[in-house]
Image (cartoon, rainbow over all chains, first blue to last red):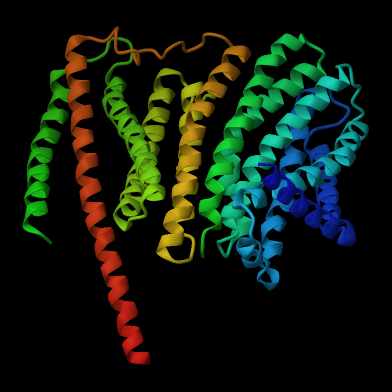
Amino acid sequence: MISILKDAWTIASKDLSNEIKTKQTIGMMVIFSSLVVLIFSFAFDPTNNMVKAVIPGLVWLITVFSGILGLNRSFLSEHENDALTGLRSAPIDPSSIYLGKVLANFILVTAVQLVSIPVLFLLFDYRFFGKVSWFILVVIIGTLGFIIVGTFLAALSANAKNSEMLLPVLLLPLLSPLLIAGVQATRIILENELIADAASWIRLMAAYDLLFLAACFFLFEFIMEGS
Amino acid sequence: MEKNTGIIDRLLLFTLIPSFFIALYLIFIWSPVEKVMGATQKIFYFHVGSAWVAFLAFGVVGYYSVRVLIKPRLQHHINAGISAEIGVLFTTITLITGMIWGKSSWNTWWTWEPRLATTLILWFIYVAYLFVRKMDGSTEKIARLSAVFGIIGVINVPIVFMAIRWWNTKLHPIVFGEGKNQSGGGIEPDMLVALLFSIFTITLLYAFLMRKGIEIEKMRHIVKKAKSKAIEKLAG
């Protein structure tokens, strides 16, 4: 088990150092999420009271939309120079490839969120009433679930020629319970309602994360096998 | 084709046709007209039947997906795919009949009621599954990948169901309750007979379509093999 984690960390640090060198994906993701905010400012008048109702959904929309850009890259970049075959033939457990990619993608998306969510609150002039710690907890759990399923499906769809188009079609229906729970929990926390109301949603998200982490961990082997 | 399967097919067809006519008779002539909704209620028999078959079909997809991973066989892969196609077809029928029924009894084509939303998400998941099967690559690879996606999809369905339930009860509590006459308990005995018979008929239709679909898919594979063999011969 420890060796799996060690190998996973090696793969994640390889991806991250690659990203730090080029800064291509993360730059695109930040720009894209700001563009989504811009478009939404046209759709909903920011001075209106209605903004309060759409902010919780927007937090998740920019996460998912910009995250899909990064997820698409994470396995396609391995296709250059046939690096995926190298990974596959390396003397490591296939699950550690998966865990490493999850780790790298999670750090990447979190870095984007650190920029885009404050920008969202700033541009929409949203006053934050709720507890910050609970908000961060919800965002972390939700993002983790999104990355767990997203990385798995990115690996799956990387086999297709039109993987950029395939990934959102596969991913979004599977994410629906997580997004419902995430938006509801975020709304409750941002409006400073009872935390107890949000707790059941957070539990659902945590259960979703664990269930899919376990399922993807064991099924990942089948995706990596031969080609 | 072997003789044995031909007999089963013919038997299925010859029970299917008369039972369809009986079902139509039971639904439109024999069963009483519902007091409040009138003739629109008749759509309910087809609606429930196709919803049941959709769930059955997706269950079959999950079952064969697991079997593909345990022991890769072309047969399991084909079965799962055909079942998914039929499932998507019947989910579409369920959604459309449900919308027509909703228009006449709730006066709206669509409402985000838990059951509707889950059915729609189910539809999306299995359309995505069909896309995975259409990916390019060797048959073994596609079989493995689509089986993996099928399993992930099956895991997701109960979670979606629960999530949507909780979501809606929080926003607006009992609006439609357990469905007006979807509970089955408060139904007229005559209507229940018609309903059960139409469910039986549509299940028969599923079995028939399944057998025919598998046969066609197998032929397609044979043709594909023969084609690549011929091309090899011409090239070599």
